[in-house]
Image 1 (cartoon, one colour):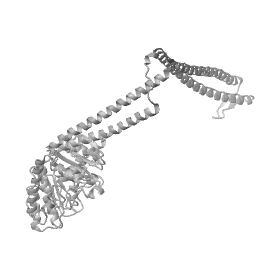
Image 2: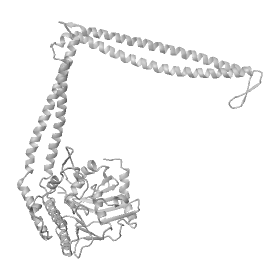
Image 3: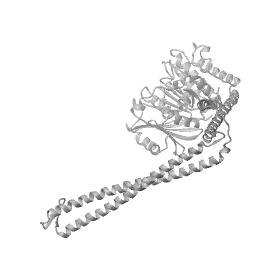
Image 4: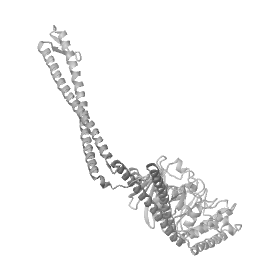
Length: 568
């Protein structure tokens, strides 16, 4: 059983420039303070940082938009987890980033489950899932707002898994250990594979049936070697046509590209020619003037015979180039026409293929033989696929039968009786110690019982139940044992004597080597060897005075998290 302990939590609000750092004792930490000083907000922040939302969310997480950094250990191996909005990052003992997540159910949850040996599987929408972290922490947390009215309900959104209570109780108490759920998971995977294979099997059977109906039965069985000459000739013709098609296609593409380039060049030359003609006509009209002004820039140029002759020569060159380009375009067009004829010739060769297909041997055409062979090959392929799926289904069912036999080893009735006996012993002991006398034995006989007392008896009966479950979990569970976090147990205003009894039971009866975090208004004179932290500022859990120190410690983690490109 892995052992999870929390060393420290740091909360940082960049928005309000406030922060809080709390270090926890490895055994007992008592957080004292009147109402509205932030005890519950701090406690809820522990689970919020692990992606488990308490039954009622603290205003702190909506208004201050805090960043949380929690330092924890699993069997003395240090880790840290950073939460910023809905983004999570996990770091190792050297502050190296291990993983980042932006989803809990499919990301952070399975990752924490692997670290903490949490193999519980629950069913939702006919599929098996590893439930999110709330289900891992469920036996260890008593929420101020929801945990004192009903058991196994201190977190929100638990009913996403219908009927979760029974499997969760059986898992955490060790009635059904990790090995049981590993086998159950394997069984469910095989069931899913059977469903897929059966669906595919039915599709193949339907295709096979329709193929027989549409194409009919095979009416003859001819040796294809009887058409050996024709088949060889057919293959040669097909190869020749394929090669010819490729060559023609390349030539046509090349001709098309050349034609586009030449047409573009001709367009440019024609435009230049028109501009030269305009310049010449303009200079001729002003032949009596010794100079002529540029209509664009206003500069003056000589307007003599030599200048007009140069313009005329440029026009001649353009004519020559235009004739050359037009000739090339004509050649390209001729090539394209020739290639189209070749393409037409290739299509004509297809007639030869049809002639070959029509050749007969004993009144059977080669075309019919090829069709027959194609149908035969299709049917054989379908038959093989159908047989393969049938074998896969049979194998999966055989494996399920074997797993069911293995799982019986973990349906140990003697072990279940032993676990149940310890639960009842502890329950009677704690009910007596807390003077809960009205509860009937049948109301708590089942280990998954809902405790239904009223008034001041309810929180005391629930406390007795929680501690009974914790002792059973410590002794028999294969999952991680997490910190016991109890928030505001003194519900319904118990008298001073009963208040002291409840506090003493909580402090003195925690299972061996467990970590306890307890939120109270006062210890009411009860002594504790653990660490006591007192909050005094109303409405100000986060402090401006702590901001710089906490920011300096949290910011390196935040930067690594933000800069990371790995998101799961």
